[in-house]
Image (cartoon, rainbow over the protein chains, first blue to last red):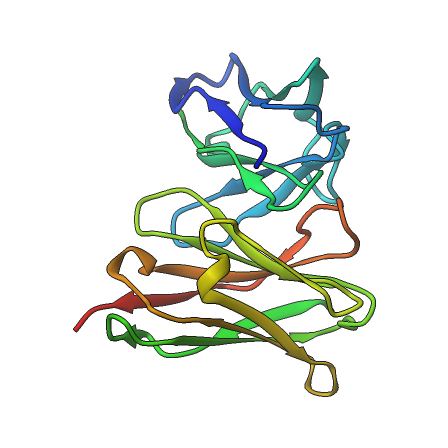
Length: 107
Length: 118
């Protein structure tokens, strides 16, 4: 199974900062990597797919990138509403695997 | 519009079998895949398994021996059956759609809470 190592587990950021969350895959996944945001009591929502493509309706302050087998989600000038838990998912090969999640608080 | 809705019993006894249904609308099961994802209380997301547009299935390695996913295309329903339930199977179970292998989960159901307890 492909392992997705996500970090950090939690972080707190201000409105002026740039937030970066990373997921490192245990092997190459050919950019079959998506990012999801989950708020308390809600279903996850798709933010980024194919590592760098923005899902419909997602603000442009969200972006994705890759360096080797490490994938990153960046939030530029986050809003308070961006608080939540973020997960990566590899859909390169089954069994698909999620990262462990990052709890983000925007102050 | 695309919608998915999970249904099933909220409480299951240990060692019994869980049966969940995902009823979909706004898309065809013969041209999209449906996945099950679960989330234990206060914990992260875990991919459970999938049924692909052609009807084949894939399962989480750790759950494979206890799990079965099937569908009824005429009713636009996908079924999850998991036997020998333990307390560790207590979770919210979501169904979600992916248009094709490798593509992301673009629509999710609201989830159904399943508690395994006597």
